[in-house]
Image 1 (cartoon, one colour):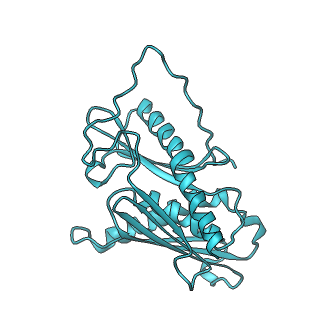
Image 2 (cartoon, helix red, strand yellow):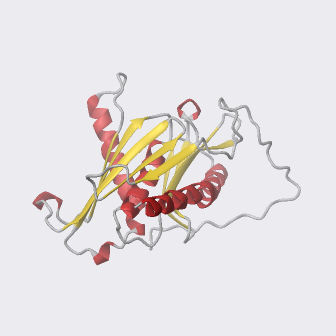
Image 3 (tube, one colour):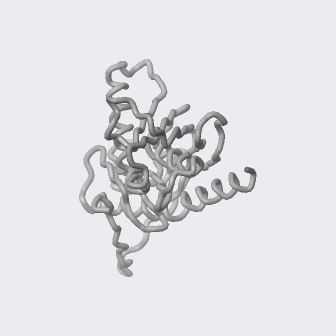
Length: 243
């Protein structure tokens, strides 16, 4: 796992007062709180595995097909294929949207690949297709989390699930967990394997001081290991009970 990062937790400085919990976010959340989340596995009957995830008003559905032995010639050598469709916007050119979808698909593949035992699937391909039904920030984070649940639902062998979330910052430099679109500025997205305590991918967008980057990564890692991993386990267990 050369591309995995092991976060080191900083010891608290007793001389520094902790930040106030309420900082005037539009939805009255604290700086370290997620939006209301909902997760469910097995929502599509015709896919090998599927899942649905809500991060507030951001809603994503994901389907997994395979592993398939018959791979198109142009896709050979790609054991994991990830695609994501974003909601259309009247202010976004089609070419720009296509480029963003390609970028997000590649980022999703990089985030998920370290958790999947691809070496056990020689000459096979797993296809992951995510659709963002509604967007209000954290699209890629929700898609990665949803895809991980869909892979579990498909019975794909994995060493751990992958939870993902993002963190932004205010003009005053306060780090905000799970920002919405109005709060989006410079931000960090972290994909994390909670049972192993390993980060599989980090993406930074916009300028941010190094100390704030470290703070954002730690906040996202704690969020993935806590709230998101608990909800993912609950969704998986509920799916097994209903099957």
